[in-house]
Image: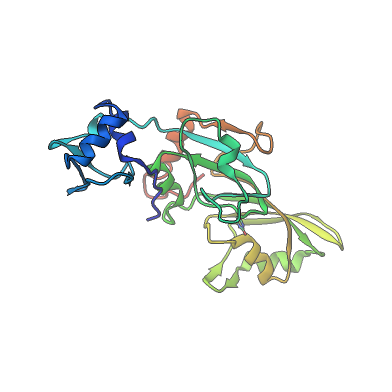
Length: 253
Ligand code: URA
């Protein structure tokens, strides 16, 4: 399972739990009074994940007191932004687009730097894992512009499925929106989220992608969200996403 890690400094976590100040938490750490996942941590600088790591002070569990307010936003990612939390090449990060928020939200899955569109960002590790888990296969809809004339026979080949290096790939739905000699526009729905899957599917048919935009994830769309901006997901939307992971056929949208 893919794990989203929200790492924060141990002394900040202790302070956030309302136990004491950060400075006094550092002293408690140095005194060997703090245990993380069963091991004494007496050095400074250790980071923990409040959602999964268990912290004890003087034999008392802290996790129960700690409430992370779970928040998820729907971002309209522009091209030119990477979905990682850091970038050694100093490229723009999607998190820069919501840098004013105090919450530390992580992109759910990835969109290529040259892909725009719908991206969820959350501090809800459980929801993120459910959204990314292959078992739940949420529908993802893409608007694709390819170079060249994509005709009915190409569409038939796409619908039959293409062979990628990591196995076959078949869209749930594919249609041609416009087709001209120089470029064509398609709409495609897939349920998987393999690395660069759409681009590789097009490549397998001999087409290179000019633009790629994710326009839908499950029932969520970009309606009313301008490129580069975002909105919070409502509690009812989060509930509906979670509900889709229950039951016999979690793939329904
Ligand atoms: N498929 C791709 O090829 N790229 C993306 O960013 C998303 C899906």
